[in-house]
Amino acid sequence: MTPRHVPTSPFSDQKPGTSGLRKKVPVFQQPHYVENFVQSIFDTIPDREGSTLVVGGDGRFLNREVVQKTLKLAAANGFARVLVGKGGLLSTPAASCVIRKHGAIGGIVLSASHNPGGPDGDFGIKFNTANGGPAPESITAAIHARTRTLTEYRIAEAPDLDLDTVGEARIDGMVVAIIDPVADYAALMRELVDFDAIARLFASGFRMRFDAMSAVTGPYAVAILEQALGAPAGTVVNGTPEEDFGGHHPDPNPVHAHDLYALMLSADAPDFGAASDGDGDRNMIVAPGLFVTPSDSLAILAAHAHRAPGYAAGLAGIARSMPTSRAADRVAASLGIPAYETPTGWKFFGTLLDAGLITLCGEESAGTGSNHVREKDGLWAVLLWLNVLAATGKRADAVVREHWATFGRDYYTRHDYEEIESESANRLMDGLRGQIESLPGRRIGDLTVSAADDFRYVDPVDGSVTAQQGIRISFAEDARVVYRLSGTGTAGATLRVYIERYENAPDRLDLAPDSVLAPVIRAAREIADIAGMTGRSEPSVIT
Ligand code: G6P
Ligand code: ZN
Image 1 (cartoon, rainbow, N blue to C red):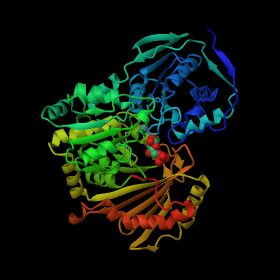
Image 2: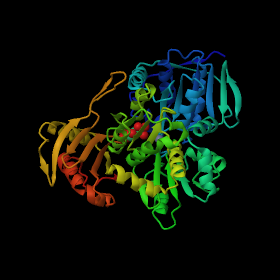
Image 3: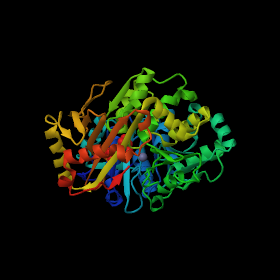
Image 4: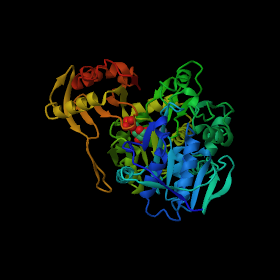
């Protein structure tokens, strides 16, 4: 059948952010809104004729509807074949894995990550390129430019497909393959981590809890942890994906994964606790009695990665986003490998991974990953941790404390001021920029500013420059504060303040983070005049 050419007019708000186009559900429900954006993506793929596309999402409200629309748009835009996860599901790392494994030209990933779902929640559409990673800035800018000039989209006139049966169907000339969303991903995990050693660990009575937060990792975690590795049934909790994530905020941190956190800090704690977010790319790791910060988790995994078969040959290098603590740099130095500091956003790791300059990378925002895919990968991080525990025979809390004893400890916290007025947020950042020259040498409480700048990144592979990525202030006392505005919020602006302090004296490794960081927090508030500028005396979320 000839596709329908539907006249449309541009929307002015289709600018992709840190991680694709993210908006409230009702925005995506406007007539033509989804079609316009997907057509704009397709228009930036010049070689799409006859190619393979991957489509899937985290199962949130609108997921199925947008999968159906995307398939019909794809059929009218010349794709030969589309791979779709059964039920329209693919975790973000699994989508990356499937794109790479099947030589797809790219993928449409439907997710608003850890943001709440449901009819009043958030939705998102992201484009990943052939390497499996989020589209780089040059492509998202082209997509945005296209959304502003679009006058029509092309869509096949076809009934909705049955997404719940594995097998092949057709829309006009295009083949739609409904695939098991877990199979390719599970096979890849088996190559990277020692399944036999982990299975022996579970058989010996080791117990863990994995909280899938009613989001997409449920089926992956049940298949891998319980079915393949023999963890007892019930190890995975909240394992059924729901359109509104059971009304919860599917963000794996001590605030939103509170039940798991409380269990791990109680006397009944199992040996290990972990959680993942809405689309399966983030992770939270909790040892018995001890929350492991994402920055520490990256450093610890880097120090022990050689114990897993996929990394036995060692690491080429490590990268972390700029606001992530410097713990990973210390490991890189001890291994004699390079450490890279990139802007926030997983896409910035892409060139380093593709060029083979790094093997592991991670972010303070609960993202850890490696060169196996081009997204951060929550369940992979959990499996690598399990591999480390199986190989060392040590408890997770002992692994963390030994790490601090060897490398010192980067005490770390992040303060978020959510939904502040965009104008005040911008004024605050401008105020900081204006102080960069005068700050060095300034004394605030017991701290002395040693350096200040606005982070500017020059990609070592392609030379691209990304400026204004956050204000960094270093103190002579081995402390650091970073300020930046979130690129993923959907209402107003979110100011993130990242606070850290390094200690390596043996008697200063097990202190309460609050007490170590208090002077740095005070300095952070004073320098930016957070209360005066935002009207907030306390952050809305502390992680
Ligand atoms: C998403 C991206 C991450 C990024 C995070 C925080 O999860 O995939 O790479 O670190 O958002 O972004 P934000 O701009 O909200 O701090
Ligand atoms: Zn996510």
